[in-house]
Length: 630
Ligand SMILES: Cc1cc2nc3c(=O)[nH]c(=O)nc-3n(C[C@H](O)[C@H](O)[C@H](O)COP(=O)(O)OP(=O)(O)OC[C@H]3O[C@@H](n4cnc5c(N)ncnc54)[C@H](O)[C@@H]3O)c2cc1C
Image (cartoon, rainbow, N blue to C red; front, top):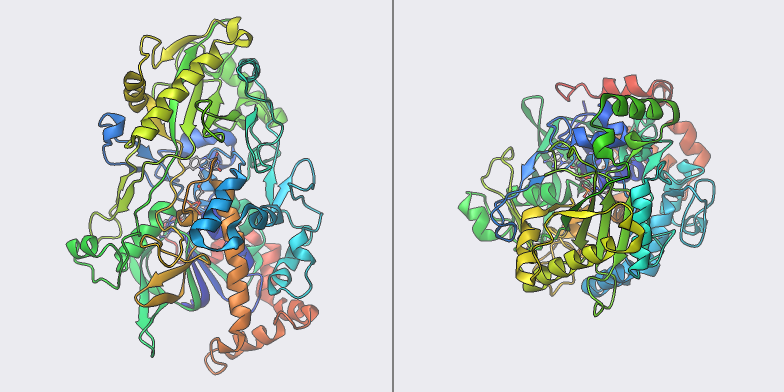
């Protein structure tokens, strides 16, 4: 087995799968994708309601916990992160959300690079989007050539040609509705929140059903969208699963600067070294990436020294700036209307749910955890929508607990732009030890105020006439609590993560001491950028987006892929010398972006690729001889 590649991508999650697809499209580039998780051949990954069985399951979840949090009255939270192909996109809530235009304009200001303005990121959302309503100014769709692909000369366009009709990332309408949610939507309108059909035009204010990443009632993860079958059929693509990246490897170059040369991986009970001749791309997510950087000597010097790790670069921003959305889960008992609580609590109800999914791929089994959403202001003085509702026709005591036996709905609300900042810090120098995750929720007065205000707003929505016939009664936190202090404290009791950690390897301008990567996502090191190393995942967001974070992460990966391809085209002749790998060099010649595409296709038609096309799964299994117990 070869351990020399052009690109090594660490983490087959949301970002990693897209990168693997794009970078391996050039048959002359050898790409290795590594993930600590197993393949995504577990049935609950694919059935939307299966997130209930994937979260908290070692088969698919890293099973992290936060430290005990003062703002949560001493509670520690479970902190799920996907550990399988597709990463968190294989266990997440499937909500398709871009955030607000101003989020990206702010990124551009913070990083000093206009590449991140809303106008300049929108085309990258559309580039891989397959929206069920078809293409429009705001959306991309399969079969419609995105504007970015109209250039004849951009090497990235050459890379994207393999997609033919394009649009891998399916955005669907949900296949259900609930009377109680329809009533909540009307109540929200009566409380002054306008109805919206589309949360993804740059201004997400309004109330409506979320759009979801599903296809015909199945979860649509990034592994399905970008790896399968495209990458599996490519002879230049290799994937190691159940392979845990331990650390990055570096060498000092002639001018004294650092270059990342590869990775050390723990796979099948042995330590393996894989070498990258072009780039290592760290896409292990907001928890995994700072952990790997710290274990490799890039992080806060004091922390590294405390754990006996040699400091390559004192980077205080690695693992700092953790931001997350904290959802405050208010529960209301209702009468005279169906909710999932009672439907799923009877055998007959369960049977009907199963039957509906089997016959029509609809109903509660096709259900994303939250169906109805609303973006609004926690108080009238807020200049923009600063809170998001996720409304669910169900209730439970805590995540992972059984549903209540009475009918109820949950109106969960989160502060979209919290000012609290947390940390991710290694606890030892062992790669297998989980890091300490401390989000510091509700640690600022401003966040506690938004928490109290948003609970009051929830009450005022629920008190509107549209919900009156279901006689909603506040079960949590309890109507007896009214003051700001009481509400903020109770928010700490009933709140939990909505799973959006970002910012732990943030991008920023050169004068920002906490910026880990530059605006093109290259890692800063001693005396300049470290050659051959980028971070491409949710961790690079300097500020959390005002919405769910999966599709923004895909957009980031799409932009990064274009830069990686452009950099490679520039340093085209500086790759592996011909005498080291003549076959690869010849392939590279045949697939040069300016070369003849037909020649490339003929060259790529080796028996191995043919075999890959014909027998995707077996080919995949064959490739995984290193992956241990899959
Ligand atoms: C339960 C849950 C619900 C969510 N719901 C939504 C939603 O409805 N909508 C939305 O937009 N967002 C949602 N999110 C957030 C969204 O899924 C994430 O923001 C996004 O997936 C982050 O992508 P990423 O590429 O940064 O990381 P991930 O997708 O988490 O990928 C990281 C990958 O790296 C691998 N990895 C980590 N460390 C190592 C290592 N040392 N060696 C090898 N591999 C490693 C992991 O196994 C994983 O596959 C949810 C997340 C969760 C967990």
